[in-house]
Length: 407
Image (cartoon, rainbow, N blue to C red; front, side, top):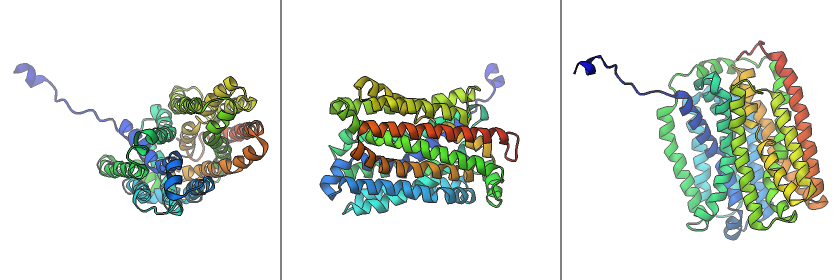
């Protein structure tokens, strides 16, 4: 009894940083899952809706194009809405897109409508999730948190691939989208309970939304947007054409699928690992982004060789390093642009979406007309150019340290 009297009360340990990272990752998955599920279930959609390969390209391009058009405005909208209104709204848009595809898609053209809504959700969710991380995650773990959040995107790709044999070929594609919509619905009450009621980022970003971006900050953001456009352009080419070109390089269909899975895992692991290094003072700048894009260009040259071993190794490098810089770029932008993180994210993400839209469309023509060797070699040139743009952004980043937007 005496011992119980002096024993201190045990209070639950609060870990707002872990909770914020989980919310940021889950909401990102909800926003991007519609487009990846459509791509993963293209065969089933073709059979039931009469969707052709070109129609698939139009629908997927719509998602990225809407994301690009709305990204910069979404940064300001997110600043005005705040976390508790903005995050559930983004998830709600993702839910409507998933439910619409599941239940209101009598023709493939309806996919354009639903993926446009998903694109709006995607444009809104990144500024909000970045603001949540800045608000809730300690500085010493922030780069790791951004890496985990961005790892949600290749995780969504992997999830879409696994859902084909598990769900699409058993209960059907419409019920697969319905299940995803149900999970999005279940997330909304969790968000309303878990999101901070009074966040410092809400006050700072709300004030920042009424002010113009500092003039010194804009060149860095535009340079980073250009680097992101080039990096995302070549990265989405890797994601779109690795399997089909692997078959031409000598892989069988199963081996090409396994290669895509291994490369996706490399992309998932690279993002948080780079973040851990940045949190410990290793890298953590746009110069590191440049190094990763440069390494990705070497991987693309290996794919251009056409030899199966070089192709396989190059694909893993292109996914892991050439596509693993996203979380680090978000971290650098948030650190440099703070307290204008939400608006700055909207600007830089617009570059990512433009690259994601144009890259596969343009390189589809290159691959079909000039062949895989030329296609992968040109993708390597794009990656190297992105590395150069990242170095320009790094020089501007150094000039802003201690400037008008301190971290």
